[in-house]
Length: 195
Image (cartoon, rainbow, N blue to C red):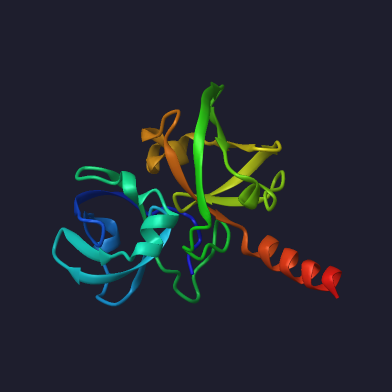
């Protein structure tokens, strides 16, 4: 489980669709082999660790469901270690289970914030509500508004500077994880309606 509060931006040293090696600093402090770490919104397992990098494995399901097909050498990825019991939890409960992707359709500056519109399909959009949570590339963000096929988020300066969102531009693909509560409520209601 994660909070969606990104600890640092790592740099991909190599990725061959199954093994990814990431250069990092802060997250290496107490990172151990076999632990979970969130990389660009996906919960992955650490399989190796060195003084300035770590390795994770991906499987075809991860590759199909995420924007990992766009990750290359020198790509930047958001990183967060798993939550530790007893710590404060900012953001929201993020599982690291990417539901799908969205495409950035516009970005604009509004005073001290950046407003980003993201287009997604109805299977994801149906769970998005104004002022609700969403994780974008693992970062916990609040939804400003929702339309039938897109939603908007506002990025504060700190988040903009400390996540990969500053590298994103129009037509970029981003990983999306919906608020788990919305998915559970929908499933329960659907089961009730069907019976």
